[in-house]
Length: 305
Image (spheres, rainbow, N blue to C red):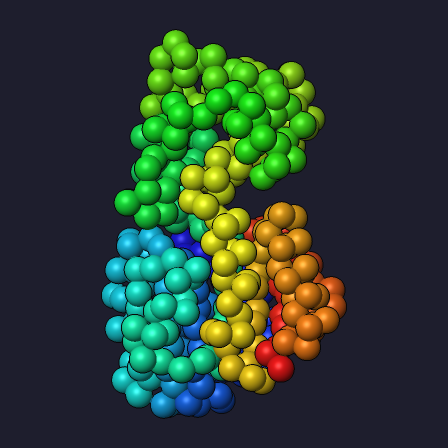
């Protein structure tokens, strides 16, 4: 089943595009919109509909599979009058991509920092419920998690797990992983998940989440330099989006949301940005019932001055 895009109507409104509508042509023709995290293309498809005709859509994803998949599905949109540019690049590279493609600043930028269910199914070890090669990378050029675990010292591993996920048992988990690595390298996601589960007390979080959840998230963030990439993007917002343009960023955990909130507030103090949302937009109870992924989503919006 296709993944439902999170906060879709709110994103379209945030970017000053119309809500989804049946019919020929969109209600915001000619705009230039960037989706820096294509994923499965749920937001992108609706954005393209709304900037028809005459619009420009630039879609990026670090995962080559996501770009190829969207390129195929985009053919069904029949958006011949929209210029669609797709790049297998990280959103942190957006200033360089705009120069390379000879594009000016955009009318709007969207980032959905969530992790798609499709990525759990591509055999890279993202899921702690599968036994797959422990890769955990979006981009094939990145070193896999199995290799990185062999390089890390115990205290480094503890810091990564604690700082990126607030895991209360980071010390115990890091020690268990480190000791196992000394005996025999961890090569699959199943092996890693089992080591983590054994390291924590019984009754972990009263059974509400799998004990491996937070550690897998922390390692994924670290291996893919996710925080550094977000920080780099946030420092270049006014190079990417024109005056009067909107920036909409969806985050799913506190570390990302805090970075976005602080950057937007700093930009507002410096007179670079205007806060469109002083508090994050959350999903309605109806959306959460239809799409459980939206429960933890937070959308923050700013406008370039």
